[in-house]
Structures are given as C-alpha cells and as structure tokens.
Image 1 (cartoon, rainbow, N blue to C red):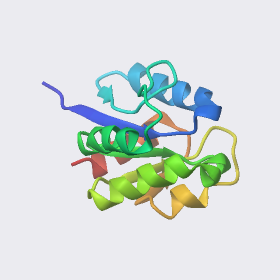
Image 2: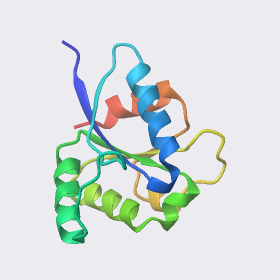
Image 3: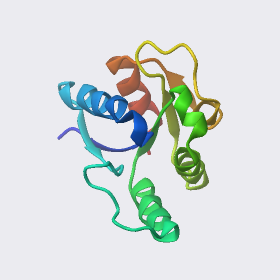
Length: 134
C-alpha cells in the first residue's frame, strides 16, 4: 500500500483560495495519498485563548510528515504563519515553501524557514514532499 502523507499547510485565512487550490492539486494527483492536518476557517479551533490554539496547532504540526508554507507575500504579515513555521522547525518537521500561481514575489517568512521553495506545480510539490517527509 502506498504511503499516506500527513501534510500541514501553513496559510493565511485572508487568502484561503490558495489553500483550497493547493489541497485540490494534491488530492487530484493519482497515486499520491494525502491527509491534511491544518486548521481551516470552515473547521476552526473554537477558542479565543491563543495558548490553547497554539497547543492544538503544535500537535497538528507534530502529527505531520511535512509542513507546506504558502509563500505569497502576505505570509510575511501573518504572525500565525511565522509561529507555525518556527514551530515546525523547532519540532524538526521540514518546511517546503510553495509559491502561489502567478506570484513573482515570495514571503521572506516562508523562504527563510523552508528547506526548499517550489513553484505552483503539482509534480514539484509532490517530489519535495516525498524527498523531505519524515
């Protein structure tokens, strides 16, 4: 049986379409089994307590084989994305930056924390996931 990759995608909720498209790209690729660990606006952690939210996110990151950071420039302005990527690095979970379709500029928050940054191409993303997953 093929390996199932547990993927946490660090993203900005104000740019949710990038997350949706990235998930669809990975799910639609034949012979690549993926399970997503991130939190989305349609299934949030229902709390205003940032310590509680961080503990839940930390566990999701720890459960992941790899973290993908959506590397649009908006990532440089998200404290949550920075915290998620720093947490992944602290937990020795590799981070791959993924540059959204059509973007030229890349978030330094993502690129500085990623072991590799790839363009918006299914094969490039899947290859990097397989290469760096735990």
